[in-house]
Image 1 (cartoon, helix red, strand yellow):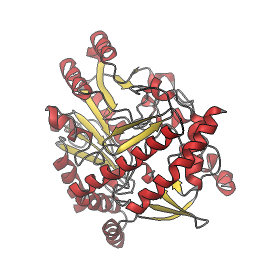
Image 2 (image 1 turned 120 degrees about the vertical axis):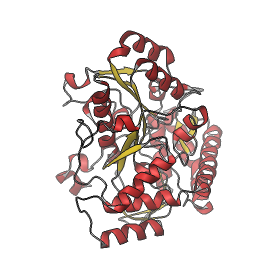
Image 3 (image 1 turned 60 degrees about the vertical axis):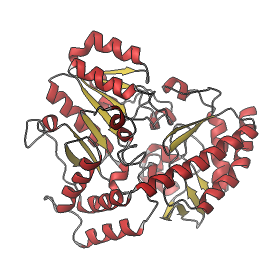
Image 4 (image 1 turned 90 degrees about the vertical axis):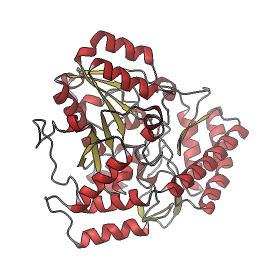
Length: 427
């Protein structure tokens, strides 16, 4: 870590990894297999971070590794169209309501491009977002953005000009009245409303029943586009992501969607897509420009395609089983230790809020946490060989590779960690 700090700001390449929210020194990982990480000191951990979501099948899944290895053997980048990028796009279109999709390299890039496209398509400038929802580090959407900003207590960030966020309106999540009010007052100026399909960047705060459908209909009535960010939930909470749990059942579809994480199989890959008429405005078919040298990278698309093809019903059943076992055991241990807490789920995604609230429905509620109690809980688990997210504002991720023995190690570690949290809370 000392060497890293000498050459990299904070010693890390993404802020939450630095352990500032929990204290101590981050573990430098040497390799991973299945549900387990091994650090440079040879210590092993059951992983409940999963690279922040992509490792649906676990680390180094043999078929994903084989697909990526074969792709590397054919060359790492061509700057031309390839078969696998077409096949990956077909797989995404086949699982979701999008009609056309453009591949990019990161979730930030996907959302940035989708917002630009929405503005270009509508000829409007205003963007509506929700406090606590994180859509990558593009300037326009870093206001009240949850995730690392919540972890570090930063409402926005220096370096973003006022003009960059002047066209962004931030509303409380799950608040229909606030949405109605802003659309009534400024609906003809709004290019799009963007939301995490089910937020996981302030902890897991699911949409209230019918909320996403309400957003889709409100945008439709006012001529704005509904942009559903499924970078985190896409292909994780179901075969068709969060849309498979609400839109597909209720009969509506977003105008635009963003994807990442799982669709890359652990490689830097993301995508945005939507209605054919909206996507047709994108270059080279239309005037809205977007490009990327490594977009549709053949190694990333091969790994992503292999991951999605392997993600069958048995995978999602195992995710739900593991998630239920671990979250249920965490609730029991914390209850027994007398630690105020709340466990919230969206399918297999869950988080533990160290709060006395009965429910967390927005960013204000998520922000009222006993962070020192979580830090004590985190380090006790880490000392017992379980790697949790190093922030109270993040989601816990499981994989289909978590064995019964992995789950049992987590369950066995929870009582001592709950007692550590209780001591920290009392102090």
